[in-house]
Amino acid sequence: MAPETFRTLRVDREGAAMRITLDRPRVLNALSPDLLVELATALEAAAAPEVRAVLLTGEGRGFSAGADLAGTPVSADIEALLERTYHPVVRALAELPKPVIAGVNGVAAGAGMSLALACDVRLLSSEARFAIGFTGIGLVMDASCSYWLPRLVGSGRAFELVYSGRRVDAEEAVRLGLGERVFPAEGFAEACWAEVKALAQGPTRAFGLAKRELRASLRNDLEAQLALEAEMQGLAAASNDVREGLAAFREKRRPRFEGN
Picture 1 (cartoon, rainbow, N blue to C red):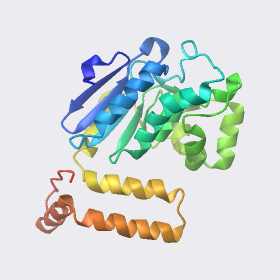
Picture 2: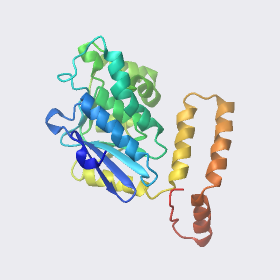
Picture 3: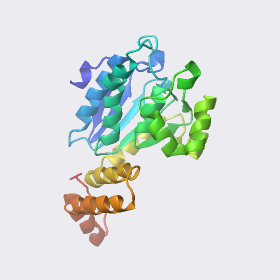
Picture 4: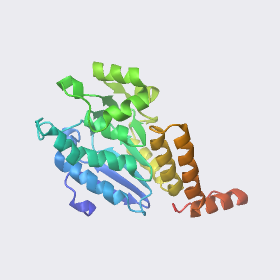
């Protein structure tokens, strides 16, 4: 699907960097089934080798306020709905072999928070806000929130956030582990995009292999992780980027990585 055919999001490229912008600002980028299907399609396009880093962000005042409950009523078929719409997106965010950055420009609540947590790194506007949201209407976490949340903030803090349902501002989010860096709201979009474009010039092959290591470490024991590290290092050592990196080191210059 060409970027111009999307109705609920925008996709643009600059060099090897791709930006996916959720584009339903009047409803704070609430996640409708149509948006999620389009997002999964955009992430399929992001798997192309010419894309070396991905930014996921929102248009307007919000990253995403979560599920579009007006357009997606809660029903007994919610399990099938999650598997059909949310799960392909979560898997793609977690498995893309390149940096995937969430640019959290405003509120990230409910399933919107889930999608931000599923990204590799979260860059926050000073106006960013996180809120679990689910339990406030009698639901439980979905779209991978219950997987990432305790891994990022710890078990006790995860319980506290779920039980209280309170909002967490950008500065506290970084202290808790929900985000990595805070930028001023003014100029956030440009600053965030610059960070992603810089990543797109990095050693993409090594980034993707390191991502596999870090994701696997959440489930592996020490011996399994040591074996995986050895395997990933073997693959990395055979890359063109390693040869360029070593040459740049010897010649005392900045490396010119090509991502392979």
